[in-house]
Length: 357
Image 1 (cartoon, rainbow, N blue to C red):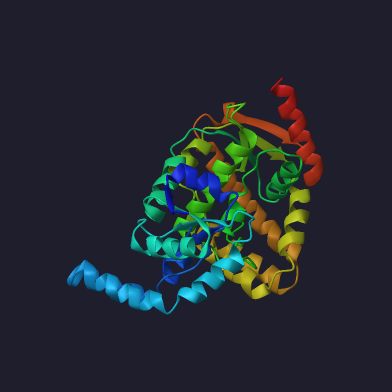
Image 2: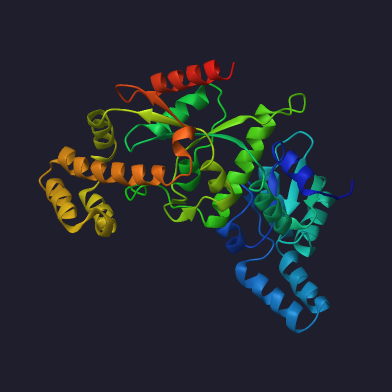
């Protein structure tokens, strides 16, 4: 067998079937990586620094010798770790480093020698990042699910996805629910780069799933209406601009029903975290409203605390909606009397089926 170097398009295609081994250092991997890739570092962060310094300050040959010194003692362990990951019958694996250079070549040589069928990515992770950014330049058939806070938009999207609609949950990719309270009890957010990587692969996967070669038409992809910033990460500008120009299916739910829904979702949170979240929006909420909401929380009157906050978020959402150029022409109301995600998803799907006939 021989190691085969393949293009990013082939690599992405095969990554849906075979495991990907990222042989960059642990720090590089932790910052951002190809989604679902396994970390199998050739060098530690410190070893990478030493080799890189030798390469820049002395010579390529000295850097290679130092790298081989590090690599030699790790060979058996790396084969063992790879063997635990590569379970497919054909023993096929994809390998990449930063630029598709010596690190991936060394590990690929070792795994090929052992008997695996190895593909490496031409240009490495750097080429993958170029591919990621290119995905955001494409024009997508987005439709946006909107509605005031507490309308159950995220849950509606999940219900639509269960009914085989093409959905991307941006808040799930960001590990954040979008408001000042959105990070409470959520996992740590990914880096901006990792968020972009996840989004690009998701966009690509949906196109492959819903638009096979026999039917090249772009699928309709449903997204939740978001601010550009979700916690600490930003929706890529090219994607966000598209979202602002696409049809908006606006879920209309009575205020009191939304209040019940949001109180049930956030009302059991730790008071300290809720208070801190309120303090983060103090400047926009206003001193009096901030004090009122916090006092209600401290008195265990969760409903009234969230009533204050919901009025604030309704005002902010309405302002953002009206700042969207031509929003009235883009907007279609989907009215429901209670927050029932499955029923609302059915109503949206029925609306979409009727209007697209």
